[in-house]
Amino acid sequence: MLKLYDLSGKNDLRFSPPCWNVKLCLIQNNIEFITIPVKFTDKNKIAFSKQKLVPILDYKDGFVSDSWNIINWLNENYPEKKIFTNNTSRNFSYFLYHWTSRQLLPILFKIIAHDIPNILEGNDVEYYLKTREERIKGPITKFVPFISSSIEEFRKSIDPIRKIIINNGFISGEKPGVEDCIFFGNLKWVDVCSSCNLLEDEDPIYKWYNSLLKISNQ
Ligand SMILES: N[C@@H](CCC(=O)N[C@@H](CS)C(=O)NCC(=O)O)C(=O)O
Image 1 (cartoon, protein in one colour):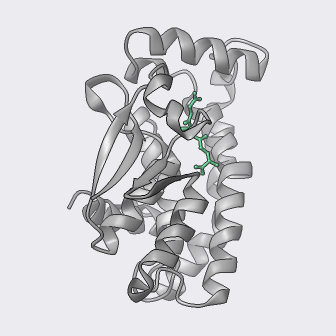
Image 2: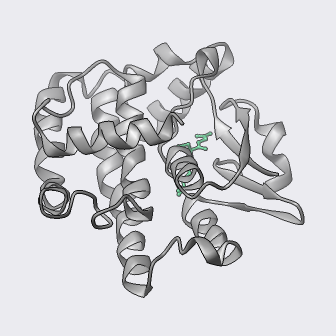
């Protein structure tokens, strides 16, 4: 059975965007797996991987880390699932992976950075504050005054996805596919860490998100 090392917070809350992307891909493709919860400060649990980040997929003969590598590994090892339907799908997925991690998650971080300590417990709170405040060179509350403009920026940035969803139903086409999985973690992160209204109720992306949420809860 595949084992996915998955970031966990207080009350076993799972909140990592790339971990959610991989989990949704596994669920959607009916690939059986279990998750191993890993707290920020549980680095000993993942020391075997010789790096410090999750997700990590542990399979019978080895492991693979990084959500993009994991999705590629699944594509190669479950060819019958056709995770990438073709090369165009792989290329667009690669774009989504980079766009998400380099541009979208940093905007979302500014919206929820100050909320994240509330979903952590024990040493993880201190670890999060220390590492993130070092990274942003200031207090975790530094972005709070700009939350509404960051929400606006995010809503505008994802307009191309909105158009695709209006035209096709899903990012991958008429049915949800790997491209949808790679975008899902963005919204799931904010959903579980914060009570802010990231999207308006009537936004087609909000409806899209709720349909994927049902799949992710299966
Ligand atoms: N590019 C990587 C990013 C992995 C990543 O940043 N993981 C974060 C959780 S979202 C992590 O493990 N953080 C641990 C830490 O900050 O100590 C991927 O897509 O898998």
